[in-house]
Image (cartoon, rainbow, N blue to C red; front, side, top):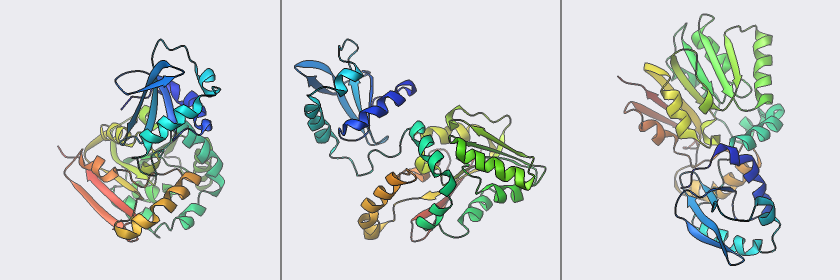
Amino acid sequence: MVTVPARTTEAALSWSTLGIGRIMFVVPATGPAACITFGGQDIGGLDTGRESGYTAITLREDTKLGLGQLSNSRQSGHLQQIMSAKSSPLSHNASLPYPPELVRRRYDRLAPWYRLFEWIFWLPRGIRGRAIRKLDLQQGDTVLEIGCGTGRNLPYLQDAVGSNGHIFGVDVSERMLARSQALCERTGWKNVTLVRTDALDYHAPRMLDAVLFGLSYAVMQNGKRILNHAWSQLRTGGCAVIVDGKTMPGIAGRLLHPLVILEMKATVLGDPDHNACADLRSLTDEVTVEEELFGAYFICQGRKGT
């Protein structure tokens, strides 16, 4: 799969307005791919990857066609046919999850209404508390929540680490974090540090006793890389817990899958077919998984061994 440089992400988003297949990226050519000819000119290649779920258009370095020229070209229909043929084997969620910048904008808009989605998506009652208990936190511990959002998990984390502990929270959405900050101010919590950043760029100021992905892993485009990055900051014996939704097993999951994908794209942008538990198992053999609501939600705990 072609690696997508971060600097091209924003510009590439405009390509989706063409309605050409699924969301795609325009990146420098880095390897072999299906050839794309445009007006008789070999301009690049087409590549797809199930792991990321994206289709990439790679432009040859010597191509004379820029983004503006190509998006305005009358021959975009030819490109659309190529895209449709190449991407057809992919599942319906091939464009999920989305790039961080798009996620940030969506969650900035959803921030005032975020709590409603717990009802819309039938979030099991008490699942947040059960997930925090799986972190095995003690009073005075340090914990990082990746994708802390509006602070829905902060009360549980606060109870677990106490006033002598510390909670670090990172998120890409300013408006989600603003609500977390307002919660901290109302409750007088002084031991919470909130940072707006991509989790891949975040380095905790000290080793962590636990890491939580609270209903955030399915939204992350680079989930496995973020998990690995957080794992490297986790002390030996510490726990990482991922609580999230997923596709239900069996015929019910297959029947509901198209509807779930439509709901996700219209709302929280989560990928129900993520590999969170497998990603955690790649880091440790000490993994436990508990499913809830007929397998639609899960709590996955991994402990860092020696």
